[in-house]
Length: 255
Image (tube, rainbow, N blue to C red; front, side):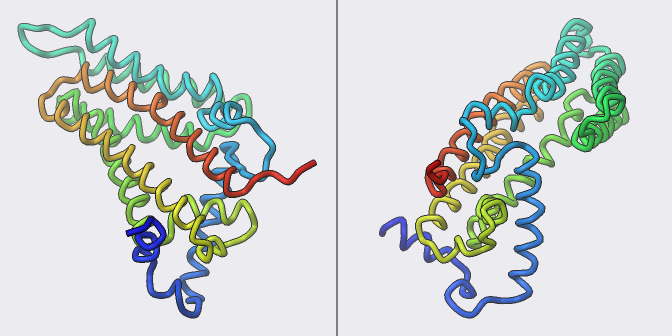
């Protein structure tokens, strides 16, 4: 069976018939939200930017990388340095306090400089909530539960969107390229957006597959280290692949 026929099998019946106004309205709103977020991150196919520049902007530059990595590094270092092999315990309050405190410092700096602080504030709230849960249970591995929840949510969203024929990638790109959902009438675009959504779902699934056994084993240091390794180092290449695939579908107009 060809890729085209497999992709066609995955399209909902409405794709072949008359458009559903309610569905189109919902897809337009979702596409606008996703497209706006992608544009703010520098992922605009209409822009004449290099792949490296796009990936760098998507990661937030040096500041974004530091904000994403340093709190986790601090948590792992303090946990490891205070870990007692005899009791199999570490100074959990200190590890969490320094990690959350560093995230708070990054957020305050953004607010003082009047920079885009929405993502930083959201990340700080998530970090603080995860730390509060870990303090409540007294188990360091519970500091990673929020990350598992977000991976499940994002992975499920990408997977479901691909399987029902409304790829989140396609919705975002459709908004950015001012074509709405017209991409669904193009078999090549539908196929590319389907596999891109599957690839993103696979990334989130892979994180869970590798990290959950470490969580249940209670290996906090290894879990934190693996989470960092499977964060930006895997995110960046997939952003690059997504960008190159989309640019192949929408080549920039000749100057």
